[in-house]
Length: 465
Image (cartoon, rainbow, N blue to C red; front, side):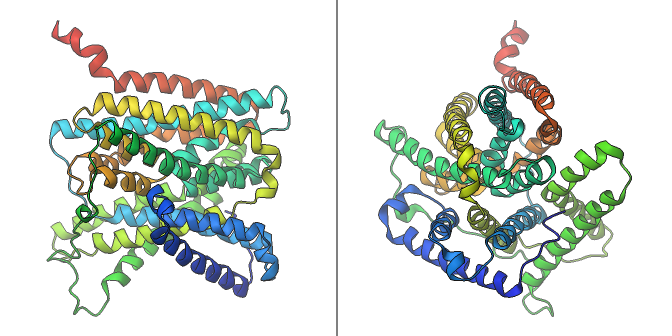
């Protein structure tokens, strides 16, 4: 609940937002004008966050007479809430279901690849930090490596949620910055390795060069049944009101759970996890609101389509950009001095194995669009969905392959299948023994889900015989 109750002077918060805004605009200019940065496909938000880190190291907060801890906490809170609001906006969008059986299989497989990569990253992270904590780094928090799938696979928002929880509830000093650093490194890996893969495949003749004028996309701004421009309320206002309604209900749900007498396990594990799952609870409530809307339309109590996909896309993009730049800005490098070794090891090993694992699965399961599937999934599993889309546009600018839709629709399967992993995130930090048991569960899940992923290759021929 720490990100709902924190103190910072309004003036200081406004100054921090102003600086972040100026830096964001500067980053956008550099992204457009500097060739090497533009070719790296590094998102503007990540570049802005890195510039903020440099300015902070040069003494920016001292020049502006800002309290370093208060501003860091403010940026962490921005990251926390921006994640939830961005996810709620995406969930409120109306989507068309893919009905073809083969497409459903491909989407399901994409979801399985996502979960399996989370598990792989969790195994790498927990295995490395558990080994270090039981050998020559006795003071290392054993479960700290479990922040790898959150930073790489989930991005800045979840890195803040659980890094902060590990720091405040379980005594992992520097946990928030540890998680945020992994997320920032993940973005760099996604862009640099993704671009490197594209360059390599082009040299081998497997990916053709795309002309810049081919990057043309069209979006439907409004459907015929939506609120007209002449209505007394603006469309943008409606979207924001719906998002805030869902987030208010999310807060009421979490606050209600906080008041329940759940015993020792509930106090130590369930309640912190509930506050960390603000984005997931918000997503479920947004989906429930869409069901209510559909019911009201069936009985003719509601005649308009209030959610606007175009505006919700813009709002979610804004929220995720704020999440990334604020989260990166909140990293406190001074607390990471003793954590450099585990950070370097898990980030490097995680990047290498994620690359080869995702590439192997993409090339095997999506033979008709191998590189498109790989780049979109790899970008998402080291950065965010937006990063995956950025890489995908380099090889499929018009989104003619199913890779883009796979990335969007796989989320439901990923959440459903990956939920046990999130439960382990609340159990593992209780001690070395709990971390070891969690690691064994991750390995077991990884084996089972890989068997499920390769079900056709393993059992298909036997059925024919």
